[in-house]
Amino acid sequence: MKYLIMGVPKGEDFPSFEKQIPITTIELQLIMGWVSDEESFHDYRLTESQILKIEKACSLELPKDLDLFLTSRG
Image 1 (tube, rainbow, N blue to C red):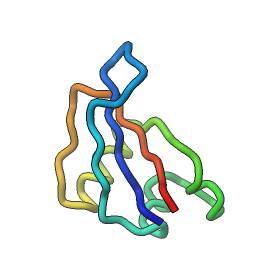
Image 2 (image 1 turned 90 degrees about the horizontal axis):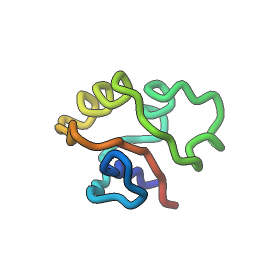
Image 3 (image 1 turned 180 degrees about the vertical axis):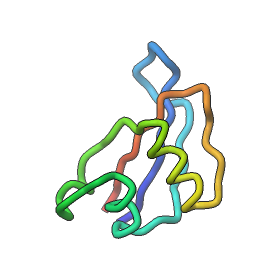
């Protein structure tokens, strides 16, 4: 499974930022609080806490001026 972070400017509908992140489903289960593998198939708007944990786990910095979403691709 590949995971992407998409950034959408506030008040808009289309992403202006997209980045594949190097993280496993198991790592994301801990960050996102998922209890089943099926939850990884949905899109999620990320909280500040989740963003910080993903940044730390992936050793990257994400944009602060966008609404960030986690999505997956098989």
